[in-house]
Amino acid sequence: HRPGLILAVETSCDETSVAVVENGTIIRSNVVSSQIDTHKRYGGVVPEIASRQHVESVTLILEEAVQAAGIRLADLSAVAVTQGPGLVGSLLVGVVAAKTLACALQIPLIGVHHIAGHIYANELVHQLEYPLVSLVVSGGHTELVHVPSPGVFRIIGQTRDDAAGEAYDKVARAMGLPYPGGPHVDRLAHEADEGVPLPRVWLEPDSYDFSFSGLKSAVLAVLNQAKMRGEVVQPMRISKGFQDSVVEVLVEKAIRASKAFGAKQLMLAGGVAANKGLREALADRCAREELPLLVPPLSLCTDNAAMIAAAAFLKWERGELSSLDLKAEALLSL
Ligand code: KG4
Ligand code: ZN
Image (cartoon, rainbow, N blue to C red; front, side):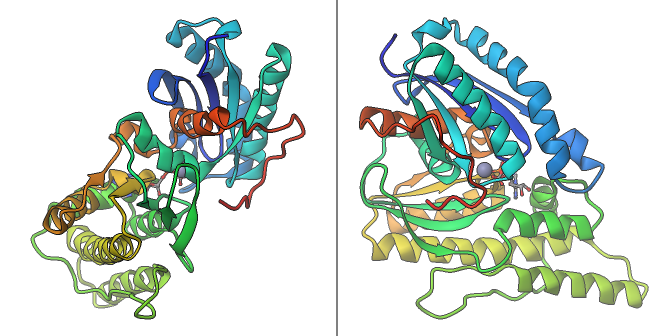
């Protein structure tokens, strides 16, 4: 075995991914097979189809990742897998694949929380300094996480309804844009000079929680009114109005949390971290506040197995291993 060489499997949603990462930092391979083209037809992820596709591709992706890494299976020191949260049928495919490999190679299995993976994607490219605050924004999550020391996660705020990415996708769908709509809304927002006025939802003054369903309803109301008046809807202006509202609230709360928890770094994670508007606004604000901002490269923002391997390395170093009766959990808590 080569110490610290971890193979990770991620199948929590609609990406089948396998990666080989050395010492939690060197990506030897990170193969991601997206099912987006399949789910596009239905305007969202269809769980049954997702798990079936994972079954079809997981072995191939595994072989490809091992080959691309230029390693032998015997070199591996552990196998990691996303245990949850996610679609249970999809998670199961990855868990069974990882268990089989760990069992056959007689090496440890390490179950990883998907959000810990998103957060530790940053460790693949940055030097982390604790305490830090992470803003995790994806299709399934919107969380502000206080990380006082390595591997310790305290959720200080979360969405009370839709996740940020989910709101993006729903608004995009209402405007007739293809799934996933987040990147389209982001692009359109940058093409408008001015957005339609939309509310900002702050909740209680001291709350770090989020709520996006009211904003989504406000967008639908604007679209409906325009339709009834026979006006042409302007997706660019709506996208900009929506994005401005989401970004303003995310940035404000992330900065407030960073100050309150004495964060040495603010870290962005999750699929919506690819959002240009959010990246720009956060970079701007962090520069003014003299707060170091960590943003992973786009390829590590969306679901991938390298981030799972990075989070697993921390557990491996500490001997926090899982047993072979590890269960996929749709609602695993951080
Ligand atoms: O992390 P991820 O790949 O999967 C989950 O764990 O959910 O995140 C996918 C989400 C989708 O909702 C997608 O629309 C959103 O991230 N997304 C974006 C952008 N790129 C991806 N949302 C806004 N702007 C973007 N540029
Ligand atoms: Zn994710």
